[in-house]
Amino acid sequence: GTPRSTPNTVTKMLAVTLCSVAALMPVEHALKPVVRGRSMIVAQAAAPPAALIATPPAGYDGAVAAGAKKAEMKPSKILALGVLSGVHIAFGAYLMLSVGAACPGLASSNPGLQKMILGAFGLPFGLMMTLVSGAELFTGNTALVTAAVLEGKATPAQLAKSWGLSYTGNLVGSLFMAAMVTAGGTLSSSGAAAAVAVAKTSLSFKSALVRGILCNWLVCMAVYMASFCKDLGGKMVAIWFPISAFVALGLEHSVANMFLIPLGMMNGAAVSPATFVLKNLLPVTLGNIIAGAIAVAAVFSFAYGKLGS
Image (cartoon, rainbow, N blue to C red):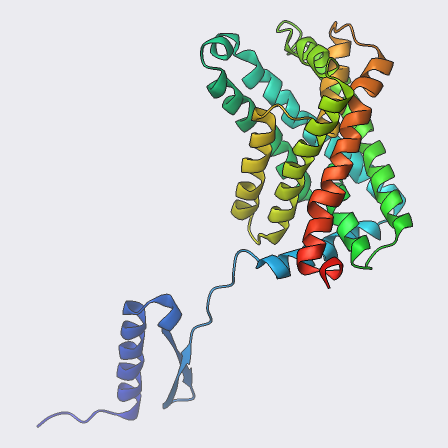
């Protein structure tokens, strides 16, 4: 006759069947078998995968929280992390000069392609190191910490502390890297560093200011969008496109220039410290502040925060 099935056998057969069905179904509808005791099986819906990017309102709230955390940091930590960020951005600019700025033939025959290469290899990885490691970048703080102030999560005094110390740290890290790269001698024969320094300090005040606004609009959007992302891949995409764009477009970033112009000065550029500050660093910094505080922080506060309520 037909052999009788024991309860244990039936339980195992049902478990195998449920597992087989679950394997054939889409993830969002799959059933996960849970065995409790010896004879009871409960089919439990699998949890949906976590979202890898925040919605715009939630993303703004997260950016504000990040800005508030930055505002609460001890001065010594802001300064130290600012030095690190200056080093990170300098490494990116160093790579940019070594690759994209070392293509004179391409620059004359296909300038668009040369600008793409200039933007793609260098500064995006510098910002990625800063954001992933939690270092303090002045230009990003003009948006995030300002947003925290606009939402009542930080004070104007904390804003001044964050901006002032991150800016000072960025400058120290940038000058350190300019001295190190000069001592290493890897760019001394190309002349690119000196040419970049002369070109950047030949701009009018108005041109430097506007290029600073346009630049940090993109940089702060990269920082802002990267704060939405939950994984490294998402952060890399959010960083790469805006940062490569600002370089290819010929815009002006104060922290990158803290490295690029002194590096050129150390390698033969006829640029004085006063010219560096007055013809580039001052107008570019002002433009960077306008972009971060108004074009990003204030606009998104109006869209999702207190300014629009």
